[in-house]
Length: 391
Image (cartoon, rainbow, N blue to C red; front, side, top):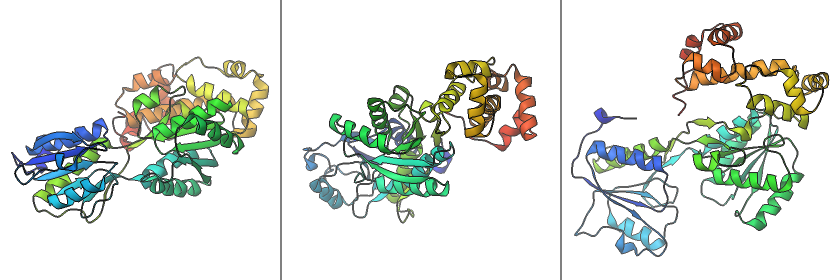
């Protein structure tokens, strides 16, 4: 993202950055705007409990033109000195400061996306796992509930006060008592990972019995989990960039937002923790997951799926028809095509590569299948369904 033509350069303008928490892309967005504007960024000052406030806030002898803060812990003495500093200030976190504008992720939208990802996979029992006293948890849960109810699901709160070993056993016991199949959204990726640990502790299969989704899309946490975790992807770069832009407006005397500026999430990154359709039959769920995990194999057959599930082809077909309304072969073809359509809309991969990734014999096989279902060529589908670069 680059908007240099929209920025009035103000070389030499000094901005102080205060933080005790950050995400790399937020910092990158902030620094990119500062570079384009020609600001002089005072070395980002990491604020911990016990940091003398007078060591943080600039003195009249060493003034700054503005401040950006990303603070989740705000000692009262520091808040008071920031108020006295009387320089334009923008906060990137929900800590309340009088007369300070905030730029925040749209937590209502994040909750809606998480719930929708579970509902569209057929989950009718869904839970939001968080410490509800946490900043922004209620806003995220509000969006989660709205989307869940609109999709016909029943949402509940799964309260988690800490991620301790003692609480893990208690969480596991509560999970056992909840109806299955169950879809759970954690407030963040760490909460989703903690839920997954509790599932493993009590022998609940993820995603066959419990599907799990987080928020933040921290790739290390999500990719290295025992079952890779799906997550709502936040627009961290824009969060940082827009925060710096608002500060620039304030420092230049231009109109600024009346209330918090909310940054919408980018979408959901699906991984194995939600790679399932919600069905009460564990054998059908197991077979479905095998299909979804092996869809790149062009030779994937009904016989192979039934063998993996440990059941005859006829029995598994009957179970699929009972719970999903379709036979096994239809599910294989449907998953191939939906995976291809997703890649066409959300990546710049070539059609030939997408055909290979989705288990089609060749590019023409994908073209004819897509045209038969939608009446569109891959190029026309991509044009009508742009979803970004998939990154």
